[in-house]
Amino acid sequence: MNTSSVVQLNQQTATARRRRFSVAKTIVILFLSLLVVTQVYPLLWLVLYSLKTNEEILSGSFFALPHSFQWSNYSAALEGNYVRYLLNSLFVTSVTMAAVILLSSLCAFAISRFRWKYGQVVMLLFLVGMMIPMQATLLPLMIIFKNIHVLNTHLSLILPYVAFAMPIAVFILSGFMRSIPHEIEESAVMDGANVGRIFWSIILPVSVPPVMTVCILTFINIWNEYILAATFISSEKLKTLPFGVNSFVSQYSVNYGAIGAYLVLGALPVIIIYFLLADKITQGMVAGAVKG
Amino acid sequence: MNVLKVSRLTIAAFVLPCLIIYVGIVFVPIIVSMYSGLLDWNGIGESKFIGLENFRNLFFHDPVFWPSVRRTLMFAVFSMAEIPVALLVAILLKRYVRRPNFLVSSYFLPVILSVVVVGQLWKTIYNPASMGGMLNQVLTTIGLESWTHTWLTEPAVAMYSLYFVALWQYLGYHTLIQYTGILNVPEEIYEAARIDGAEGFTADRYITFPNIIPIFKISIVLAFIGSLQSFDMVMVMTGGGPAHATDVISTHMYNMSFLSMKYGYGSSIAAFLVVLCLAATFLINLIFSKLEKRFS
View: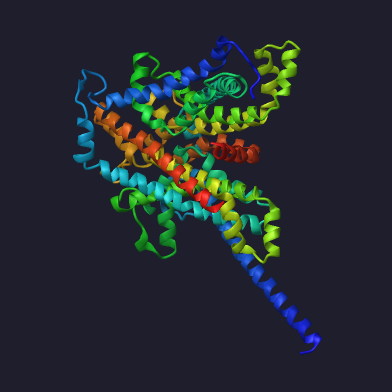
């Protein structure tokens, strides 16, 4: 075999390998794109569905576009207290988030920076709490709340939301605060700063990244929470968005388009936020899972 | 070492607000619930202490209980079986896609949606074709009419329809967790392996897997605990029906307490659930600490 044929042979195997590689790549890309379809298409389908008439939905094929957009479905949906539910959710979620961040950063600060005996015990308590399923507290909380007369108020949601968001928040925040160099405090103490000031002007400002993670985790969990709201709230005017959406959808079981419209409206706030902050949200939720 | 030496009062001011709410809302109810599990009580009127009677009934005389435990565990098994798929997707993403942002954000989209939106959306998809259900329409269109079902009202398939929705919603979450884990494996290790002739899936076998075991464990714990708590989705989609065919532990607890007004009995189910969660977490940690030792 002479040199040129060896070179040729090498070239042939090289192209063959490259071709096989690109075939593999095409298959992989197809597979990954197919996953995009399965994960996103149901939502697009819902949007189409929400713009159709009942006849189109009942007779129609699943991929057909609506003949004309039935915006009336949305006005029918909006008549059903949507804005009130939205405002309730905003209120409950923002109060919860503020309380979680304030209380758990105070606690995390004490656990990670104070010299005291029981820091680890407190931490352990939070770690055990992470494994306790929220729904196991549903019945006793209902009885307790009824006895202290907070049942059917927003407080009956905010309290458990805050409490169940705390373990992961304290865990993430104290993990971060432990990594802040201690020289910072030493010099602050020498300059005469008290503990409150060290926390408020030094530790909290540098802890913005983990606070963001906690914000995202808390927001997604609380904004979407359904079962506590459905158990503790009975007044129409206090319902949060997921509960409101569910009761609307269960009541109007024949107006399909309006149901679709209401579901789209129910998903809309969180989807808008996701479009704006997709990277932050995905990173925050993964960080929350990994650190938890 | 922690430097701040502070008075007890300061410590209390920092820790107590958080701790009081936390203990009061999480631990006190659990203890109350453990005690209520020993009562014959409808939640409102007189209660009677009956010892372990509720648990005896639960374990030996309740035809719904053990099937609901089995379904809860199946839920966990299916959710955990999804994780290798997620890992595969993550590996493919890393190897073949240079700018994965669009793909990753699309996969993740269902994760951020409320269980109500997801549950009602899939209820609509599962509707009979004559009511506009997408799945049955698709099946009819591609000539598989015999495969159509009323997905949520046939006892034999209803539970699988629910498992599927959970898998659909959380695939993106697990994929992203694994993907992040893979990205954190130092690139030099792969380069060194390539020189030694390990590429592709061989490299994954010897480098990716051992390195992401901790991440894998996180996914497993999330899937397991998430499934034990699989509650909202079942409540939204079927409420445990038809005829208890989709009851899981927590829906059984809920229905017993709020529909049958057997509050004490419901509490004993809640106590069982808490013990199961703690035991499962302990077990998973044990298994993985052994695994990590073996691979390192």
